[in-house]
Image 1 (cartoon, one colour):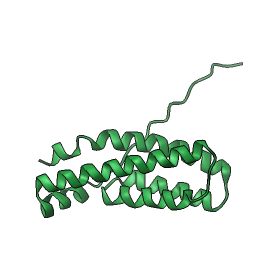
Image 2: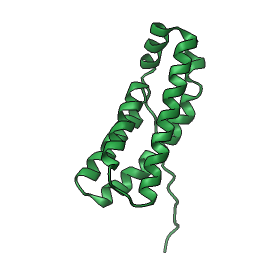
Image 3: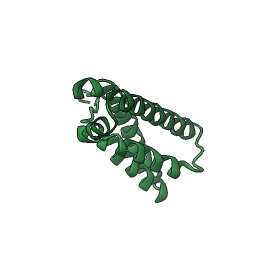
Image 4: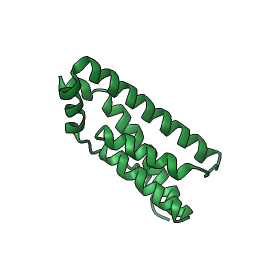
Length: 126
C-alpha cells in the first residue's frame, strides 16, 4: 500500500464588501455598526440552530432555515456563505442525503471562515 494523504479542504470565501459599505454610507458608522453586529449575531444564531437540527437529524423546517441563512448572508455580502446555504437547501429538497452531507461539511467550513473574516470588515471600511 502507498502513503495516505489527509486532505484538508480550505475554502476561499467571497465577500461583497460593497453591501456593507452601502449600509455604512446610508446609516452612518454608529448605527450601521450596531445593525451589522446585530445581523451577524442573528446569522450566527441561525447557523447554530441549523447545526443543532442537523446533529439531531431533525430535518423538519430545515429548508426554511437554510433559506433564511442564505438571505441573511446575502444581505451582509457574504456571497460564498449564501451560495453554499442555497446548495444545501437544494440537496435537502431533492432528498439527496449523500450530497447534503458533503455540502453540509462545506457549509460548516465556509460559515466558520465567513464569520471569522467578517469580524474585521467594519475596520477595513472605516
